[in-house]
Image (tube, rainbow, N blue to C red):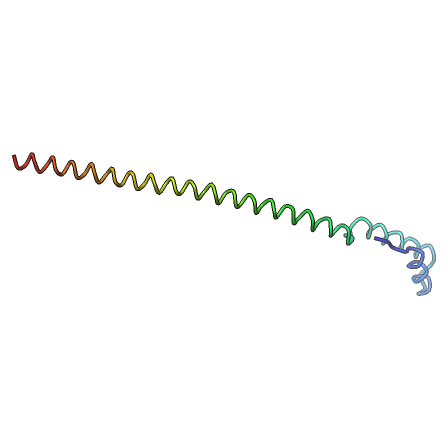
Length: 103
């Protein structure tokens, strides 16, 4: 960030601030501004980096959704198979039990 310390110090002097104090204020403000304030370029770079990070997260979420979907499909298949097998075993057991009780 460009900061004109000379112009700032002159304005302070015009307002009645002694020259040494005006220069000290100008230098202090310049250091504060350079160290702590973001420039348009800083914000643009940060925005670009943030958009990149968001895109990476979106890809990760899509991959996670795809893996979760395939795992749930496998789980549904296994549940259906186990339910069918359980019903078969129960039917077979009931048939054997009925034959034993009838005979």
